[in-house]
Each structure stands twice: as C-alpha cells, then as structure tokens.
Length: 577
Image 1 (tube, rainbow, N blue to C red):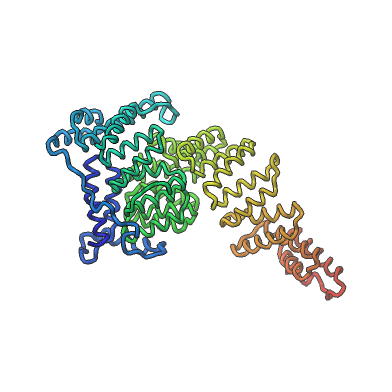
Image 2 (cartoon, one colour):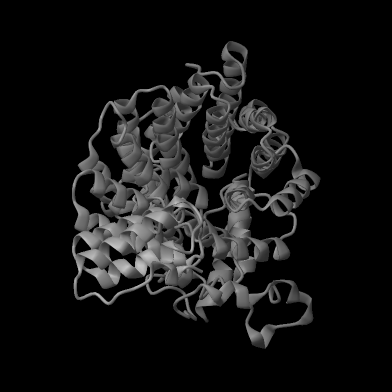
C-alpha cells in the first residue's frame, strides 16, 4: 500500500471516530487534509477533478524540494486508528446524549450518560460538562464586566473533572480522548508540566486528534520545552512541528516542514495557508498575495486566515482589493472575528479610525481572545492619539500571547508618544527579541535611543545597522547612519553610508532632499581629502539642480581649481546644463 493510500485510510477512519466523539474541529481539520492528498492517477476519474485543478503550478511555485512520499519520519506507529467500540449495549443513550450535545444542551447530554461507564460515554459526559462550565464562565464574564472586560470568572467544573479524570488515569481506565480532555483541564488549571505529559501520551496513543496537538503546541513556549517532548514518529508529528516552529518564529524551519508535507498533501488548503502566514512573517508580501489569491480561487467561501491576507493588502495599500475582500467575507459570514478584522482594516486604510475600532470591538465580542483584533485596535487608538486605550489593548494582546511582537512594538510606540522613552525602549527590545528580522522594529528602537532624554547615539547606530541588514524597504537606516556618523565626527564612515544610500536611491530611482544631502557631503568630503576627481563627479551632479546647492557646487569647483596648481584651467560655466 502506498504512503498516500495509507494516509487516506488512516484519516477516513479518524474522521468517523472524531465526529462520533463530537470533536468537530479536529474532524474538520482531518477531512481537509484527506481531500488535500493528491489522487492516484490510476484511480483518477472526472468526478474528483475539483481537487486536481486548483492551479497546482501556483501551489508548487514556492517549494524548494519535490517530495513524493510521506515525510521520512512518517512511519506510523499506529497503523490505523482502531479504538474499542464499547457502547454496543447502551448505544441508545449515547445517541441521545450526542443529539443533546449537538444542540448545545451540554448538561442534558451529561445527565443522560451519568450511569454509563464505557470510554466513549465517559469522555462525552466529561467533555459536555467542561463545555457547560465554559459556557457559564462566558456568561458570568459578560454579566460582571461586559463582553470585553477582564474578569475572575472560572470554569466551575474543572475541579470535579480533574478529580475524576485523574482517578481514571491512575487506574489505567482512560483512552486517548480522555487523556486529551484531562490535559486540557490541567492546562486550564495552570498545571502545565503535567498537562504536557498527559497530552504527549494522548497524541502518542492516537495521533490523529489535531485538537490534542494544538493544545500541546500552546504549551510549547520555548525550543527547549519542544525538544524535551518524547514524541513518537508519525506523519502527524510533522504537522505539529511545522506549526510549533511557526509559533516560535522559526519561519524557515516551518516552511521546510510544510514544503515536505506537500509531497503527500499536495492540495491541502491548510498547508497553503500556513505557508502564506510564514512568508507573511518573513515580509514576503508579493508571494503571500499570490498564495492567498490561489486559495480563494480554490476555496471561494473561505474566511479562515483571510485576515492575514487583509493585512498584506493593507500594508501594500491595495484599496480596491481590500474592498473586494471585505465585501466577499460580508457575503460569506459577516459575524466571524476574521470578517470583522478585515472590515476594520478596510476602514483603517480609508482613514476612518473610529469606524475601524467598532469592527475590531465586534470581533472581540465574538471572540475576546482573538489576538489580531486586540493588536489592530491598539494601532487604531494610536492613530486616534488615545494612548491609554492603546496601551490597554496592547496589554490584553500580550496577555493572550506573550510572543506577539506587534503588541510589544505597539506598547513601545504608545509610551514613546507619552514621552516615556525608557519604558518605550523596554517594549521595543521585547519586540525585536521576538521578530529580529523586521527592520521597522530596529528603526523604532534606534529613534528611541536618539531621543533627547536618552541621546545614546552609539546604541542608535547599532540598531540602524541591524535595520539596514534586514531589508529596510523604507530606506531610513542608511541615511540615519550617515547623519549620525557625521554628527559624531566620523567622516569616513559617514561617506561610506552616504555612498550606499546614494546607490540605493539611484537603483530605486528615488528623488528628494536626501540625494542632494548625500551629494553635498560627498563633494565636500572628497574635496577636503584632496580627492578632486571624485569630488568633481559629485559637484557636477549637483549642477543639475536649481537650488542653492548649484551655487555651492560652483564654489567647490572653483576652490578645487585654486587648490590644485596643476589642475587644468576650467570654466565653471562649462558645467551648466
């Protein structure tokens, strides 16, 4: 049996089992990967062409290696997902409980299964109680603090659930699904070490539950923690590692994993979206835009991850494309957090910041832990000069994800606006720690060092150098490096950076005062160094301008003529255009 056929069989069985246990998110994820497996040409028929078209040239465009089998570590240690079906006698109770569960009547579902002892029934009863507790917690939060307020409300079912699941675990009477729920409860109670151990045992026993992998990922906050996990080999582990690497800002390693997985899951929209998000973090916006356009062609009603696409369109100031995307998601599913963020980005790009905030707040009412909405709302408050509200929004974002560099950067901006550069510097350092390849962050930190209160110019120079090495698209770093070296009395270093800046501006066909400034400094510098030929080149270029720099260039040329007795007599007017 081929590796692709093996993956198909495993996923088909897993989907049925996950759905039967009401783990619909994990079931959906597995189904998406199932249809993402490239069809066997021998079995190819016109009926499954939908997943064969999909612009495979686009999907393969950004792949560095062509892999045609399951990844090397993808040797299944559980050949097929076979679980004991223990509900033969009391299956009718389970069906009733599942019906109640699907209707969100969680306590009724748990009550029906109160006397059932099979693994499936115990899991569904405990899972229903957990969700009932979560539902009540959300209600209490709204009642006490409002939909966006902070609250000490807790899931009141956690204590009893931990007691029961712990007892089952110690007695060896718990299956991988029960272990997943036990790990989830432990995580909610703050017992992260034991939660990791339990979740590892769950995914090692039953690797097809993506929800368990996702919970385990949220507990892998450092590379050391990740490397300490005792995970068995299976192709699902590759999905997990790719996702964790992305969360840990190891984007190149994440891309490599996803590109390898594409050898089997060639048409997986999930993998395409994750590749786009990794490239977005690497600021490869052109490639990201192409990938998302392809995703929407293949999955036109997709809302998931489209807020990242809207961020790209916002950054590139693509008004019409962002307007079209906003209209599209409104028609598909208006009340999704992603949809609200897309609409918020659209109004922000139009400069309607108050209206933008309304939509970000709406996104947070739908999901108060939606990280992007808190960060983007903070940006809008900064634009509105409402720094206290901005600080609150950014702090809520870092509470949700302490590794979100955008929120740390936003906090730095807010404190800089309030005239508190020492605080701002602390937050800028946090942001560059989590995203060291973003030139904007280094530039912000450099400008903070340049402030009157700090005036640490040598440290600013170090930051600008890092920015220049990080593809400074705004062309700020080189110019500031030249000016700072000139101010500190390092003319040779200043000349070096002015030349680099001049070369860049010429390559990008830029115009403006920075060109004149660079030409003036270089002409003066080389004249002082008695390097008259080089000075003459820059003076000649200055003669093409009509401002006072033209007269300065004439004066410099005359001075060089007088300074060099052997210099041939020359008429300055010869250099007139």
